[in-house]
Amino acid sequence: MLRFAVVLLAAVPAPADDDGLSVLRSLLLPMRAHAGEHIDTRTATPELTIVKHALRDWIESRLGSLSVRQDGAVLAQQLNTELERAGFFCGDNYEKCPDQRFLGYLNRIQIHAWRGFLVVQTSVGIMCGFDDSAYGYEWNEPDSWRRFWHSEQDNYEKGKYFPQNLESVLIAQKFQRDPQKRSEKDRLILTLGTMPWCSSNWRDVYYRLWRTKSTYSEPKLLLDQSEHAYLVIDPPIQGSVTPDDVLIEYAVASIDGGVHNRRKIRRYVIDGDKVRRSDPVALSPRDFVEEWRSSNWIDSSRWTQPAAQGALLNWHRRSLGPWEFMDPTIHCERRPDLWQVGVDISAYEKLPAMKLYFLVRWRPPYHFTMVDIGDHPWEGCTQPDPQANVFRTLFPPQNWR
Image 1 (cartoon, rainbow, N blue to C red):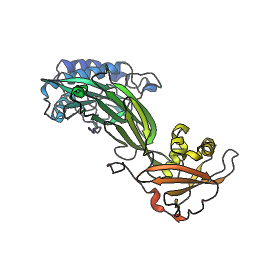
Image 2: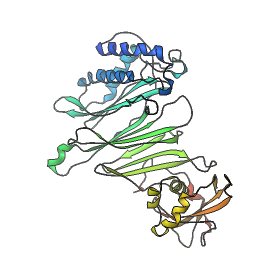
Image 3: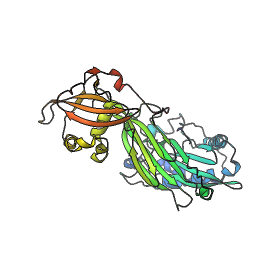
Image 4: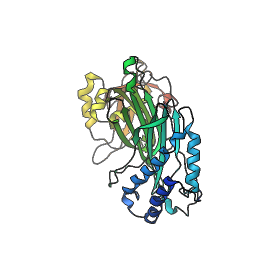
């Protein structure tokens, strides 16, 4: 697997071009005069794709110097030095890019090598950040790199353009026991990104999953999701990928304003080209109640005790006002796999104030089931458990399987 972090700016100008740099200069310099235009698409226009491809092509013209056994960081440093001397970076010179208008500039290239794979990451400037692209290469015997996958944003229509800072690119290749199938090169590629912006810790996160295979004419996009998230932990979105599943974690807003944010867990099991959400969906009883309540019923019903699905569907659909969790969560000592999560619901839009008690089954390590919901505490649930909702994370990986 590969994990790649986004690296920030560096600067300084000076001439000395090869043909590729001359092409980039002819494209980038005119853009700088329009850095304040097209605000609705972050100053990005279809011309940005031309820049992305010119930069990619210039990098590819230099990949011949990189053998399958070499680290790509040295080549990346050489290329970044040339781009810096050519004046393509803003760096800390904000007079060059006032108000974070980076159109007409680039961010630093990253090149990462791993077991016959190469991932090149590029960044082109827009308003309030950079639009990252990634390109995957495999070693093509006897002496060259062949591009087999890419991730680019190339639709610049308002409402359809979603630039991102790539936090990581993760690759898993399935080992084929059958020698006749080993040439298929079956891989999953997961990208994790965040929306670049001038300010605010609340922004969208993105996660996308592709499957590539020698028998496919092109990579298949299996998963393309985004969610408004709280970008407070570095990295703000984390993940892992195996040949059979994907795990993703980030922070989202809590229904309870006093709690503020909670960990969002997304695990998907991959079966061929089908993607199915699976456990874990939460790391604590409280988080599970929020996830059950906020998810669609198709998902929530799978996390609900079968005999109670009819009754709990009505609770799932019911309008509820703002709520606060009751402290602490209660353990049911008579039935040690059950916890009671209480919520205090405020009066809202003519709805009366009320108290609700969610009965949750928790089996190790993180398998949760909604058992029942009522307006009175559950009999046999009296043991306070302040440890039930302590902060937990699956990264670095724990033995949660």
